[in-house]
Length: 127
Ligand SMILES: [Zn+2]
Ligand SMILES: [Zn+2]
Ligand SMILES: [Zn+2]
Image (cartoon, rainbow, N blue to C red; front, side, top):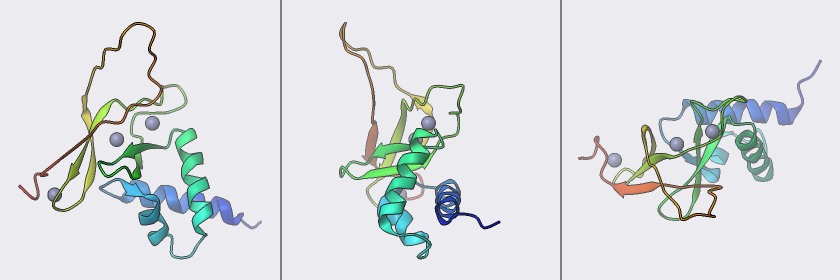
């Protein structure tokens, strides 16, 4: 039995994201798949992994979408990411601060769908 190419690409992309100590953009991921699949497949696989609650999106301070592994989401839990993200201006590392949550209170009638919290500054390795 041969493993379909897209399944291999999906496994590899998830591995790349989980092995990384920083969030990765689509082009970072594409740079690491080593020609296993094309750019369009990378986009599709990332979308699929987000809907399967394996990874989550982070909008960086420059507006570029990055992806990082979900450590607490599974099918039983909400795919919620109200933790802070930190973007280092020196080393460009974008990290999840998983234990730092923010409570946002909205006026009556507003419902949050997505919430992106990214702080820019100097990380501990650069400070
Ligand atoms: Zn998640
Ligand atoms: Zn840094
Ligand atoms: Zn995160």
